[in-house]
Image 1: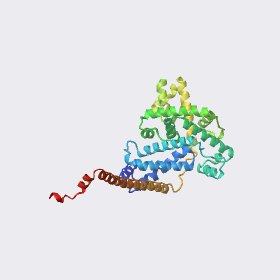
Image 2: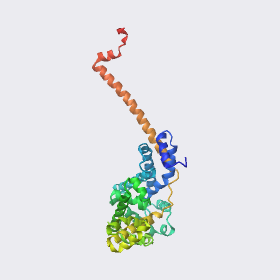
Image 3: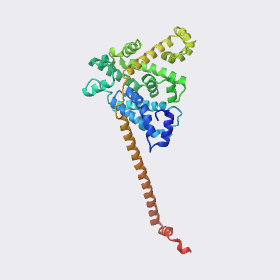
Image 4: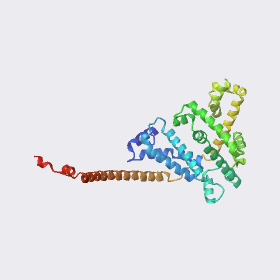
Amino acid sequence: MLALPDEELVARCKKELPGNTRSYEELVRRHKQRVYGIAYRVVWHKEEAEDITQEVFVKVYHGLKKFEQQSSFSSWLYRIATNSALDALDKTKRHSKNIAPLTSQNNMKNEEETNALNLPASSAEGPEDKIIQKELRECINRVLKKLDREQARLLVMRDFEDLSYDEIARALQLGLSAVKMRIHRSRLAFQEMFSRFCEGGRLALSVASAGNSPMGKTITKKE
Amino acid sequence: MNCEELAQLIPDLVDGTVPASLLAEAEAALPQCPDCQQELALARQVRAFLLELQAEHADLRIPAGFEARLLAQVRVQHSGLELLDLSSKAFGMWLVELINLIGGLLDPGSAQGGSRPETGRA
C-alpha cells in the first residue's frame, strides 16, 4: 500500500469506496500535511486551516469517483485546497471575522498560534514584532481578497506553496507559457495592490528582495 | 533579443530557470528594455517577499488526530446518505401505494378488476 503511486490508490478508491476506506486513508496520510499547509498559509489560523483541510478531503471522498485523472491526483487536490482556502478567506471578509489574532484579546490563543508558526526567536519574541507580523498578514490577505480569483490562486500555488509551473499547469489544465505569464501578471498586480493598501508595503518588498527580513519594518494598513 | 521576447522570459528569469543558452542573451538585452527591467525587479521582490514569509512556518504540522476526525465525519455523512437513500425508497413505495389507492377510489371497477382473481375465465 505504501509503495503504490497515487494513481493506483485513486483507481482502488473508485472500486472500494464507500465500503472500504483503506486506499482513501493512505491518500489522506500522504497529502494531509501539504493541504493543511496551503490552507494555513492563506487563512493564518490553525483551527480554520484544519476545518478547510477536512472539507477538502471530504470533497475528495465524494469527488474521487468522477475524477478522470487528466491531471495528477496531487495537482487536482492542490487546486481544490487552494480554492477552498480562498473561499474561506472570502467568507472571513463577509462575516467581518478577523484573521489569526496574534497580539490582543486572547493571550492564550495568541501564544498557541505564535508557537504553532515555529517562528524564529527574533520574530516570535516581542510585542512589536507580533504586531508587525499581524499587520503584514492582514495586508497580504486584503490584497488576496482584492485580486482576481485566478490571480490569487496562481500566487498561492506558486509563491505561497512553491508548486512548480508544470504542476500548476497540470492542476489548472493550462499551457505552460500561459501559466508563466499569468503568474507574472499576478505578481505585478500583487505588488501594485500591496504598495497601495499597505503603507510601507513597497519598502517591505524591497527589503525582502535585498535578503533582509520584512519583519524588521513597520507596515501600516491604509483605510 | 527584442523587448517582446525578453518579456516572455521574465517568469523564468525570476525563478532562475532560463536555459543557459538564453541567459547571456537575455542579460545583454535587459539594459535595452527598461520596462522589462522594472517588471523583473518587481516580480523578484514579490517572489522573495512571499517565499520568505511562508518559509517561517515550514515546520507547521497538522494537529494530531486529524485523520480520525476526518474519517468520523466521512462515515457520518455516508450513513446520512444511506438513511436518505432508504427513506427515499420507502417514500417511493408509499407514493406508489397512495396512487393505487386514489386510482381505486376514482375507478372502483378497474381497481376491483385489477385485483379480481382470474379463475372465472377458465
